[in-house]
View 1 (cartoon, helix red, strand yellow):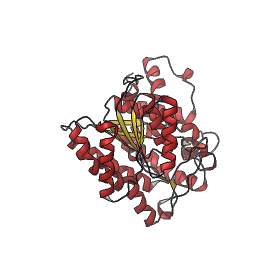
View 2 (cartoon, rainbow, N blue to C red; view 1 turned 45 degrees about the vertical axis):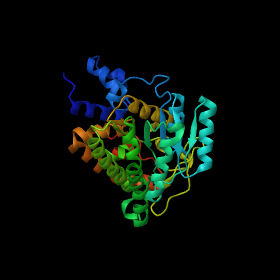
View 3 (tube, rainbow, N blue to C red; view 1 turned 120 degrees about the vertical axis):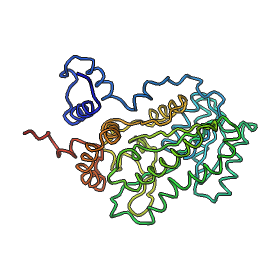
View 4 (cartoon, rainbow, N blue to C red; view 1 turned 90 degrees about the vertical axis):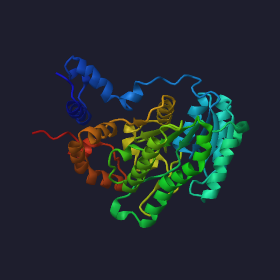
Length: 359
């Protein structure tokens, strides 16, 4: 039997919900394919791409925004490990200095700290872009990584207009303005790659995170268009879409908007995401895959475990079923997040807690 996309999606959904052992699947070529796909933590094109060599980014200048914590901090360490020279930007200069010191001590990396608020006036962003272009004896920027931003957990009806506006300013308008400020420098060099850290929330609806999903969809639309416009300008662009990441663990802070305000940095152990930790990828793994996508010049990369990765395939290739599932779990996921539960246990959301109902 040929393994069609719908058949694969239904089978993986069954495995996800029922936790069926692979030993119970028939011994076929399709079984081996299912095992690989069901255990995947990224799209197949990325997983089949070339692994990062030790010197993948040797002497390359990598400018990372949002580099003071979470995924941004891990991206700095990952690129440093593979030979890059770093420009680290965020608002918190002290934290940037700490991240830079960690990169230097671990890998002997050259690091330049460039404090920056992506929501600053355009003239300030132009000044920052000029400084980034001039560091390391005017080497220019080889990889420009947009990572600044914040997440949000709140039901639509509870989210204030103030939070919506602040999220769009931080997650969308700021990165767009910084790109416009930096683009003349990047294009003049003729050797820069733009890496945009988007989200699987731009691919799969995210009940309980509507404003976050909206900002990532807006970002995805803008930078996909820019990607097409720059095709003949020697400035390729990659959209990396991570799913749930285990940031906020082991003392690593994470910024999250609530319904009304941007909360103080929180930690996974005391936050609503603790129940879904097993569905999340570690920051080092996500950073490695983002770097791998950049190195292999991928246009788009999906980085997530199931059920998010599976729902991405469904929403992309079988939207009727994808929408049906999202409508089924949407109210429950929003309620779980609001009450401090996991938003990634598809079994409990589809069938309730405990054993799956049988006919």
